[in-house]
Length: 260
Ligand SMILES: NC(=O)c1ccc[n+]([C@@H]2O[C@H](COP(=O)([O-])OP(=O)(O)OC[C@H]3O[C@@H](n4cnc5c(N)ncnc54)[C@H](O)[C@@H]3O)[C@@H](O)[C@H]2O)c1
Image (cartoon, rainbow, N blue to C red; front, side):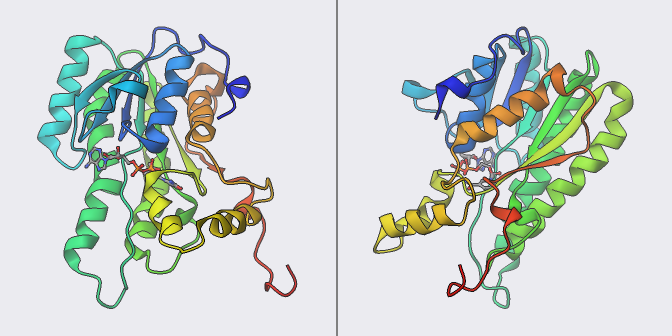
């Protein structure tokens, strides 16, 4: 993380932000950046964050469960008294061969990655309508292109991008904007398993870096910086957009290794 690159403090002073899945990884990076910009942050996650490096108040939340989502909103209304920013970040990812893909694991992925943002955004809307607000969905470059054995993941992330357009249209008249960030490869536990599974982890990291025109993979704060902008009034004329934050990876179609 480059602290010098952090956005100006104070842009979000007085605003209240809910970050789902904010106990670790990208969500924790988003929470840190929102707090730096002055927002009061609520972390909605299945488990509480480690006290050591967390920001904000934790509220127990399962984004797949309408009752849990309703309880979280009631808690925010009672404790913080308002809600201005919703970051639909909670997500899961696993590999599964398409032909033997169990319906159960497909449904589990859809429940967290796609139904979750629907339930949270729907429940948040009455609070957001009071003063206007900003919803930021965390999609993925896999909403545009797919890794092997990722049919459920790619479908849910494409769905998140589509939902972003639809919510921008439906909620715009209430002063609520909705945008998405599509991250590329970000260093978190979600994909560490892929890297760690290889016997030469350092070589994997080197090869991953070479896929990116900027020469390295991303950090959670790289996503947080864009979320802060989308959450702030500085992006007041931006809605219905999916902003790719991938170090240029999708901009460079691969050449055969012998030519690269
Ligand atoms: N890491 C990447 O390279 C990458 C790339 C593109 C998109 N993304 C997306 O970014 C988001 C965050 O990914 P990450 O890498 O930080 O993952 P992560 O596994 O490190 O963290 C995910 C968080 O979501 C929480 N969560 C999972 N299920 C939940 C539920 N039902 N209710 C509430 N919270 C739940 C987990 O407890 C965890 O804190 C995901 O939507 C992921 O698809 C990640």
